[in-house]
Length: 483
Image (tube, rainbow, N blue to C red):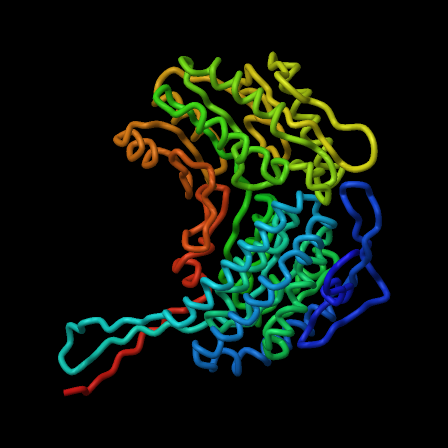
């Protein structure tokens, strides 16, 4: 792997300030060609418990530092990430597959979260509350939760670590990161830079290995006071159940099936441009990407013609390390077979392919950017989350019909709609059962905004001042005999 700083490519885990190896390892491959990149330790219960103990021992010192001192360490981490963004992006592209330009954007996003929460560390405010009883005063304090665990996904292997750990560290918590076994090297590189930034031993830890063994320790330990997870709804449900015995706090950022509504008064060219950008970012492997295109009858033909043309002319599929390509591979063969199954089901029930529709022969898990027309609610692709470059298009006649179609999902993460009507912007936003709504835009993520969903898309919020609250306990102090 060609890096300006080869030391960023680590093949060990980081526990209590030390790099740990193991006889048992997990091989990591490049999804664009199957080439072996390296391996990481397959740790188990003992090593995970060691990480929990180290984080627990580090917590008193880290939490008692002034907010300004914690902020300074986070800012050094932020600066190191910015200085090494090209190496970090290259590591990510090799193990995850996304184009280098997207990988650089993700590193910049990760750095932005760290910078934001470095500042928020100094703004954890309490309250004084008027007391109804004479001679007493009420003071509300906010304190760090304690040891926190973060289980992060493969599709955004750096940004998700930053979005979960930065607020925890800023609040005074210590953290244990369990990255996906498909993309562990991004986590190791961030750990290397965290070490250089000066986090004390035990404050920031990374463990890799079988999800069942590591997860059972993190969910079962009474010393882990908070768990944050991004991934599938099925796994999130299991983690929530397993956390119940220890009654630990939990944040879940789960599946999404975002509707993309285009009303008759929309700017069609803007909607088409955003539809392509949203649907095909990371080859459709994002939880907030547009998944269901719901287009008004009167502009359906215009939208479809322009959308298909843009897909065919603007998207180029190939290895992410080659700058000419803006569509990388899917993460593995399971991902390819899932969208093939959805397409077969849709075609068998009357849908038709406007463009694409097939895997690309050769090495790697590449799939053609695809647009499906005449898509009906009975088809799998409108019922199941699609984590791939397939855009199913349906039509509607009335506003209430569009809202009903959009809400007809167990998920409630993100939704998008396009209209020039200001009254409709408020009305439809309030009717949509989603935690995030983009009006005339399909780019929602920002370190300053609360990211999270409703229904089976999870619990809690990440990013923004609300993201800090997820890692803080509220303590009420009543002072008597004041007068």
